[in-house]
Image 1: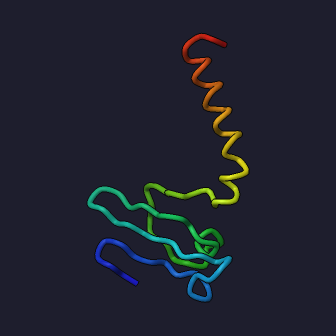
Image 2 (image 1 turned 90 degrees about the vertical axis):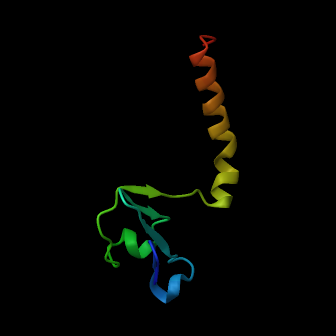
Length: 84
């Protein structure tokens, strides 16, 4: 489905879980693929050349891994200021 510069790339069963849908956003300089679906990853959907891919961490995964990423960030900051 085309919505101007944005195209919805539907997965199987109209994107119902676990397939998902993807957005393809075509700008004047770059094309961005937002949230690649299972069908895109498996090559079942034709996707033109893409310059960037934007994805997200699922809420449950983010909840579980959030403290780990916070710790990594804090260690990185301490290394940057010379405390470690």
